[in-house]
Image (cartoon, rainbow, N blue to C red):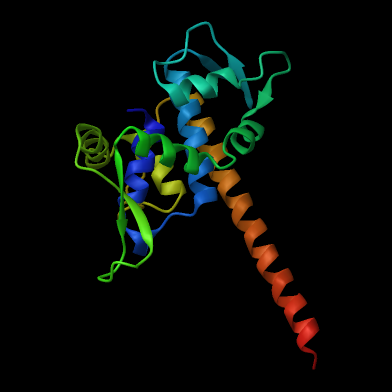
Length: 201
């Protein structure tokens, strides 16, 4: 399992009452992929740019896809641009991949059989590994989870990131999620104003 897969499992394991927004999670997954690629030497971070490295991507299909989509010509891509481009609908991509791998199962919510369907992790070594990283407050996983609102009451005990590249990526994910929230709020205000216009005095 990769950091992105662990993050996805932790996010959906919170249950429907603590649901994480798909857009927020997609941006964080893109950041998690980038951090794993940095760790593998497949990319480096130069300022705010993603620079392809000399090492191959880890042996993971989705990380391989991420590596293939890197911009390989100078001036290279800004981290923020990478997050938005790679992150488009990425949560749905991870859900499909994990379902195909048998890591997720679909369950109906509520006591009635026609309740809405939701997915949850199956009890597997991968889920236990993600849970172990989470319980150990592994800094990268905890930081990314916190950005999307999954902190399990840990916000007062911020994880320390000791790698400058990782810190830069996490900060970029945070900024992107905040920007997405600002877009949502603006849209809500515009929709409310439009509704009031039609409703009249």
